[in-house]
Length: 487
Ligand code: AMP
Ligand code: MG
Image (cartoon, rainbow, N blue to C red; front, side):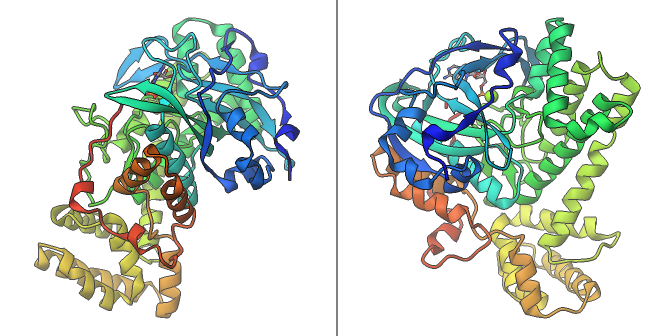
């Protein structure tokens, strides 16, 4: 276990120099205070969890203090936003404080979001509000607990600093951890600004530090791109299987590591709705729930374009062609497991599609349906769940098919079925209304609800006593919350 001053820095990205990032110091928040910390994320840095409660913790992650070895930098990148190219974005309110390696030899970027203005702030104030910082924190840790690749969050620091959005709010900072903060948009920036030397340097950097195994391949860059395609296919399959809607899949928000990144107006589905749009600025539904799948491929094509100096167009196209089949295989594999199936049959895809259609038409709670399906034998579970459906004949037909499929699947006890299904079907997810309750309390100075919700979400598959209220469908007021995009 380490104290805060015992972190070991090795700032590899900063060493790439001023063409890639700019030195900027964090702008401190007034009266910084700990809102919530993740013990699991602290463990990634070998930090003793007790240090979260010390004043120096809030000072470090509230922008007041800095390690001597930290080299805070704002990264430059660009990206396609809602399909249109924006030539220069960059860290407008976040800073890469430095890179730390832990005792296991893993490197973690420390990225402080809400740290003040940078050369890339454009019209923004460089700040993040408490509301959005809590949302990013909870989402990062909740997705991780579900087994979905994501950046992590160490803590949220609140403050008395006023920040103006639609109304006056308070500034906060979230400390984000990831093995890299390099986005698709980094490659696009150097490609479209026609800086081939820097682009080659960036590609070498990513290959050496993040895809070293691809070095062994005959075409290392192609192998790296293929791996990025594969990771994205898997990540998005998990989003779809668990009902996660990212909301702003711009290429500047897509990580080169294939992890969920840059949380904004995201949401988990309550009722299943393939057409759900969580981002209220997304008038055309470009980033609707079901569109995430083709958008994943669109984004990879944008990255492919930026990699044309290194890889032939034919090879890029071929690698892009891997995306959909890989996505489908991962998705179907997960959905089979969610249905309690251990074998594969050709018709399983249709079984899943028919169920989702029925759920869509009846507004069935996506998470609770699967959880309850595992509570009992297939026959008892479908008999109980039947009441949630409007199209009873349709559901009965599906249920017959499902029971027959389960019978063909294998011979196992109900205890085995429950255990297996509950291990993949969460009871607790980060519902918008739960986040909203925690945020409202935190905005009035009570952080206990954020902390409790965070605790519950770290064990989403485990039934926790006294926590029934976190495993309910949303109340009417919580169903269609407008999540502000101004974060
Ligand atoms: P996002 O939608 O959060 O991914 O942000 C898109 C771009 O806008 C990034 O370059 C951000 O750094 C920048 N940005 C977002 N909010 C602010 C803010 N309050 N101040 C400065 N820059 C911001
Ligand atoms: Mg972003």
